[in-house]
Length: 382
View 1 (cartoon, rainbow, N blue to C red):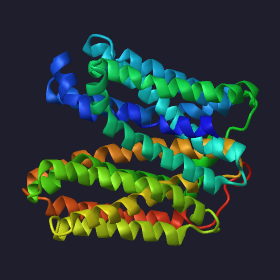
View 2 (view 1 turned 60 degrees about the vertical axis):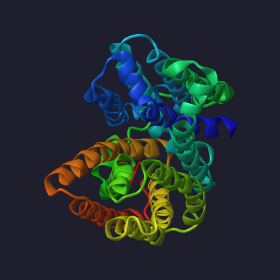
View 3 (view 1 turned 180 degrees about the horizontal axis):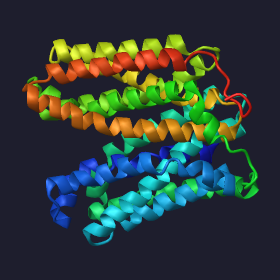
View 4 (view 1 turned 180 degrees about the vertical axis):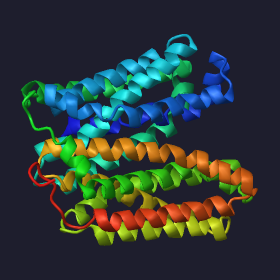
């Protein structure tokens, strides 16, 4: 359990820990703003591209050993990008993100394999640790840099420590767990033919899109509404913090029911309320809007991953469904911040972008309605 939880905590710090240090990185390495932004872009692209490798690795080595390798590669990647030069910065970031992509896809299968009777509880633990890891990383990298005097390179290398600790805790499980087999089930084709797969993929992609839009643009929206820049940053931290508790509680409740539709719809409606608050009165009650938005988005993320773990009948099918939903989902999500910014540029304000965001949340609710209905995806009936 400790190794599982700490592994989940390592799924976002390598990405979230870059943003607070980005200005310093650009000055030190000599990158333009576009080059600095490309660090995150490279990582998000890797999240989408390399996730489909996971079922192949799991068949060959087993889920437990695949997760162990992912932790070791994350540590290698964050240490590599702290070396001198832009090429190793990008290479290390890509290496860490590739490992994260594989681990993202592995985790629902590991839940199904080791905790089949407690999928709801362990999904809550997993998702809350993911969100907590991102929140902690973005909050502590600057204080850690000031306290240690290491600079951004040293702080980046320190992010390898929790990954190596998680690997150490997971090592006994990996050595004693199930090995892979080339003769194992090959559920990819059946997964791709299932309509439920595409409902789940749409839910995963659309909830990720609306989240990354807010992650990229929320502080700017509040600053242009007249709030101080520091308060705008605190509001972003608040909505992320709210998601930690929500993502732990919601899977426990929703997993007890055959249908997750009421929870998916409720989470979507809360996200709608958060968007409407920013559209109609962003400066009137910003803390309230961020709490509502955090509950909605945290619940939506947790429910998408819970449904991925619940619907298939076996760990191999869970891993295949997770690979499809997360890879395509991250590709959809990567378009969100760019399109949102483009709509802001051509319209001259935030009304049109926020209306588009509301449309995306509406589509998310529709996809969740179908994805949340009771169904079983098994090797024989996918």
